[in-house]
Length: 260
Image (tube, rainbow, N blue to C red; front, side, top):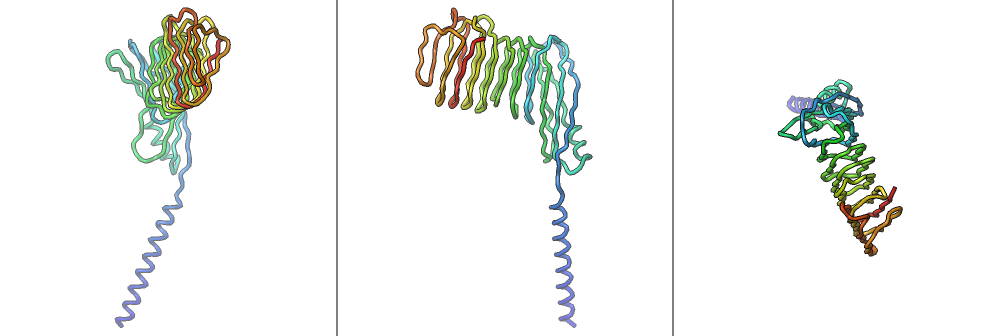
């Protein structure tokens, strides 16, 4: 009788173990998939002297506009979730916010809570004459048609097109391409740990010029450089009367300077 009871208890334990294993197996079979959503809108902008942009979940695209009262924004969102319903809940938490502190406006993507994988591409239309600072970006940067100072802090691969104003970029790695028209006594500075740097400037530019690479080549074309001094990994000289300053530094990569 005792032996039969032991066998019964052992059988019950085995059944319970098998059922538990099956439950865990079912949980393991639950798969996630990617869901996408685009949102758009506008943010009312008061009188400010600078705009700071942040996106910790993906790349940033910025385009200048003559409108000084509104920031246009698009956000392409991606969520890995188990269902559309779960993704929609996360999408609702991914929004573009605007806060103003003193004379500075801060535009940022709100990061949702939880363990769901998310990413977003933030596209902004900013007033083209208000200085812009970009920081905390996870991905590439694309900037066009600004007529003001632009600063990229710890950015990755960056493309700047049709820029009229100062430009300062620093980052760890990534290729940089800049088309810039410097103001009188303006500044263009790029300092990266690694990556190729390509700069296009008007042939009439007045600037001191310096370029340095730890491992790579430095080439220039279409410009006249006075007082030229060059080595295998560095170049200094003067364009025109040398009123502005162009400084290009990469720890590893090629540097190209082209006049247009």
